[in-house]
Image (cartoon, rainbow, N blue to C red; front, side, top):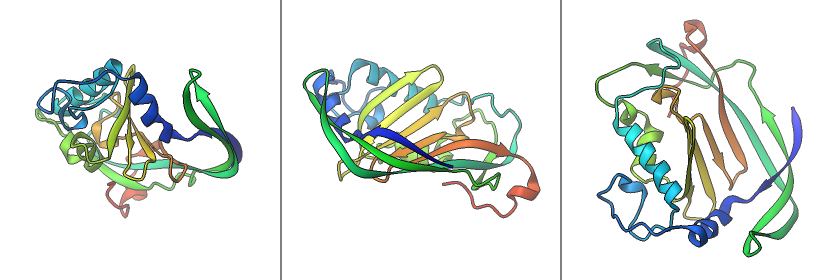
Length: 212
């Protein structure tokens, strides 16, 4: 299904975080772990969100959905965007520059064909380390953290890559850690991958690759 939408290039988040941020003086040995450096300019609300993520990552607490152990197939809806060159420079709060672009995009849902599989279990120790993406996020290997938010059970972490573009990961703590992140966005490619379905039907997931 084709659709048209507008989006803001997220690379400007670096400027936004630096202009509005509060310097963190706590260092790498604090509750923020490897996600926050000594010279970080993250806001206090971003630091709070990072602290919540780290606390969740290190705990054995798992979301209640789904609540049955076993193998699951995950189905991601993929969206993509292509900038059509119709961009203009605007200002946020009257002084922060950013680019506003129009473009065309498409949503691709593969009709119930599941993409990969995970194994869901529970333990008295944290299982998040078994999720490769969560482990890289926690170890600060996704880039430079430029923004973090928490709204209810949803934690969003945004990282600047070495080429200046921003990748975003959404983690919904209502769901088991093996299902995380529930959404991934890359401003360089305009791609969005969002978890939309899961199944325990063995006939649908037997030959699926393990989610990475």
